[in-house]
Length: 349
Image (cartoon, rainbow, N blue to C red; front, top):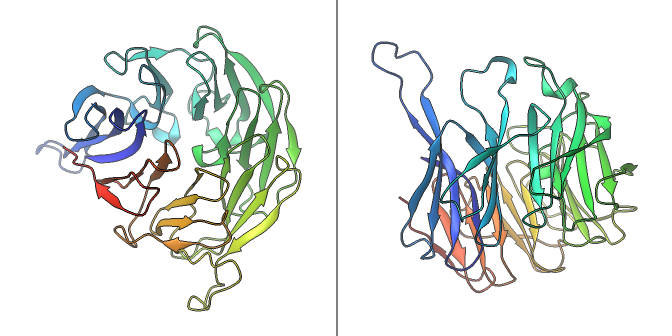
């Protein structure tokens, strides 16, 4: 098993989404492993888990609004050449006891965010079967009736959007980072009218990878990674207090070849750009592939590595409030109940 997403609605109730793979049959050992998507639920804070879903959808995003209403986004299965797998949106209204597929107008979906049980956004590409998503027009799907109907809005950019580059903190406000087909080029988009209209904002610096997090309609952070180089991307963190109209650099990593020299800002992190999460204006976290888990207590100006499987890949960090949070690796999950001072492992099956 490898775990890709975790979501907790309370200190006791949470879900894990991952992938279970088995080797191909002995008759054809050269075939790729056979994998299925899996969702587990706990109501005991991780002391015990129940299997809720096992099926063909490879789940890459999981989100709940409370303890009953949830969504899972993934691909329909394996064996799809040229990235032509159709995306699938799964929906539960009973805390995961039953999952059903929700029809959407687009073949490819790359990010989801719901702000209530009935209202949410999806980012996708309008492509024909077999057509690469990067070359297709980007669209936003909006629903206010629990996915019964979808409003399709064209975004003013073409390229790729990932869950790292999508932030939708309220029903009115949303930001999207679109990575262009040209390496290193990106566009930052914003909407303040519930996704009906979008415009391009100034991007403080182009980069190969960008991770975005907005805590409010005005307060946000943007982590930008430079050209990949064995995981030693130069990275810069920017902050905005006016919804992205202007940005201020908060931290940066040392330049290549100067890894032992602390630069202003102190963002000493290896690996690649990962998820950014701020539980308050001061308390921030970065879950970095190959770079470990990092913490800031001053709004992102200075960072320190959390001594928790240090140097390992972290997939996700999520806080329910300033004290209660979880950090996920491919095969391990930790919980903190005191704002990150102490982390404890959560038993996994």
